[in-house]
Image (cartoon, rainbow, N blue to C red; front, side):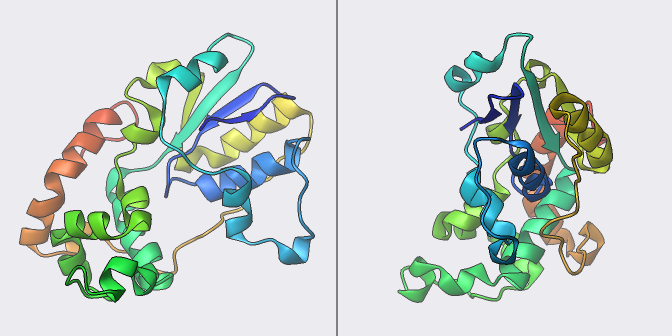
Length: 218
């Protein structure tokens, strides 16, 4: 699903764990087709209910490829994005405690794995939990393989620049506060060599896809 604001000719493809909560919040405030709930009732899930994140589909994107549309996406350093999946979804939100396959004994996986166990068994966790799968999938599945189809690809480090661009296009002041920020950081140095080897193929593919934006440190 393309997140499109017809009134301003803005089209956005969201990548999970790449600032998408912050971008969706900003877009919702300038989208005249959106009716916001009272401020006291808003949280990070509000923005995802308004603009669900879906995978890239070429046939849906074609409708926005003329020069009238500002087409953009936001990407994140692959290591940081993958580590954030564990910190936010597993540790902070404890989503595996609601995983039906684990709760019903259909798969034998701990609900509170340490990072090494989680990443060494990432495939099994992705198969067990739709949320883990959604947040750990490669960014190319959300952006599409060809990043030249966008007017601009922003890195998460460039969110202030994106806010200025959206302000310019919409004529409305756009703020980009950090939404869904993790409470602590996890790095590759915190993982065992065996764990690093297990996730290396995934990270290599991610860095190849984002080679114009992030250097592969591996």
